[in-house]
Image: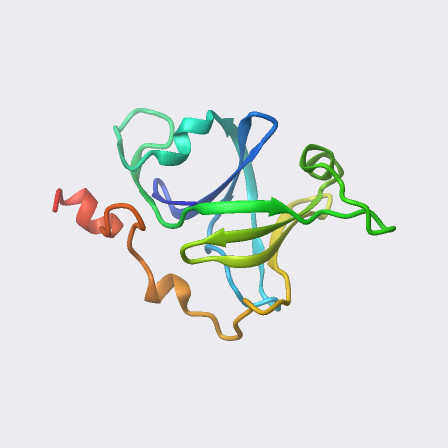
Length: 157
């Protein structure tokens, strides 16, 4: 997951599905509170190696701004049909309802991506990793790779 200070600050969630990174921009960032539904705007697919990018995209280029790796880890598919059978991620994405279990340095547990027809939402599954009144974004602003915040990276610190 990258924190990206482009025209507007947002968090880019990227999942490796079918050999590419499916990506959503989450303007308010993820929440560990299951009662909070966050807008998740699908963006273009990215190559797998983009997941390790941290730096500044120059002015005039698409996505110009500073990017840090806010969180990293692995995920497992937790998408199921009505009978409890696993649905492959590419099929779950096409159907507009996929669930993953994250094992990140900051985010853990289940998260659902839900296409409501007019927009996608990101919702935390109510599990052992759920937190009410979540303050993770404020408490953990720095990169898990460099330890720098967006501002520190922009200033070249």
